[in-house]
Image (cartoon, rainbow, N blue to C red; front, side, top):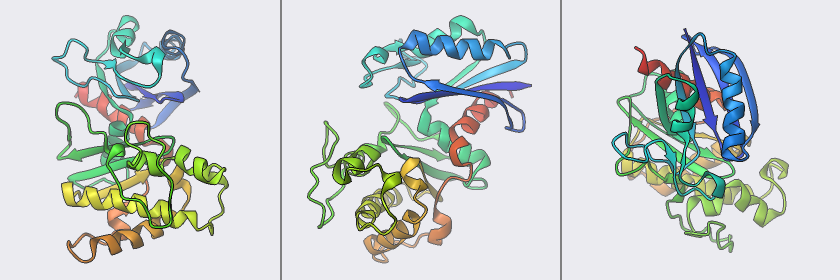
Length: 288
């Protein structure tokens, strides 16, 4: 049996077909443009595999409507991408494929992938963050996403400024939130270079680590998960993890006892495939 995964990002879509073992059998990616143009490419790709597909897992940029009883379930709602606002994503896919569809956020999908097959295997709880163009988080407890009236928007938690950082924040809603202070565009806005081009010894990285350590600190005190996994493009700076551990330890100041930090705060075991594997796993859950 095979399953479809749609990792729908604000910049690009990654569409994959996988088997029961989570192996990626075929994959394609293309830029996120207008909804109909983008989803026509999605359908074209999966139609070549449709005879064997059992279910579809979608992890989408958001905000999205996650409540099945809602009249707008399956919609992307108030996204800054104007063409996608109030767009019936799931309904559009159902027009072309009469298959069960799992629907969640892209970060929830990545969290589920890590929980089932990555760095979170064997844990009952974890929180996954992606730190890239934006910052988002997904939380899992006993195999279920932690969510309520909507999915969490962890990337917009408020953080306090580093003493050496006068930057006012890039988020148009909150300014001094985690995304506004620590996402990729905020780094480039300060330094004039994307994070990938900033040398490892640049003093800015201590500031970045301080904000990400606040994120881990807040998460630990609110949810006390067994694992916190930090993914996304910014975390490809391998030196950041040790800096985050150090700042986190200072912030906690022995108030709580956590697991060993090298085990507790990790980068993804599935690297860039966490959301794709998560979508496969969510699709498989629909047909068990």
